[in-house]
Length: 183
Image (cartoon, rainbow, N blue to C red; front, side, top):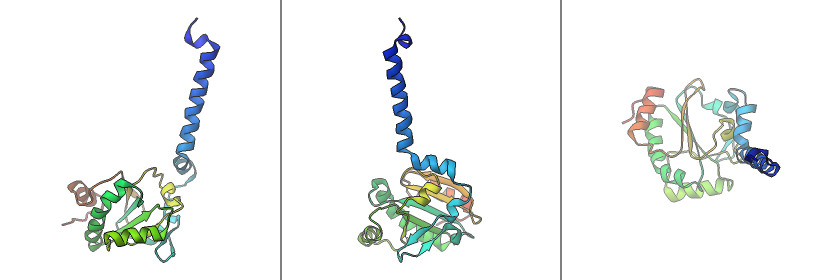
């Protein structure tokens, strides 16, 4: 008798398939919802908070080059690359760009403020997306994720994972996307 004709084997194979389908849905629900339920442009209207607990949206920052960086203090890659992002932010902002570095920390403002104070970050304003709504609206599923947005609010590209913000590839991306030449 062949493998597929045995009743026990069919039941086991069916359970394995069902398990993996369930695991995929359970593990990545934010990405499934982001792909299916968010109309274009909704990410620009999704609210997030600054360090004064004032609500903002990305639509407020339209009109110039914008980079949105999702990160967290518990993310080892984020922490490793945050220093280069802080240095890059100064140069980028001098050229008219804006960086919105959104913490995904559930510990909130106190966790991020303490982290910034320990590392002396002066070039990155504190923004919070503790509910993960904005990250979900962009369909980002991992940290860090950085999204490049033009003056009209259109996504030009993204980087999923860590990157040295002072590297040549980043300078080339900024030049290509925004026509900004960084020193």
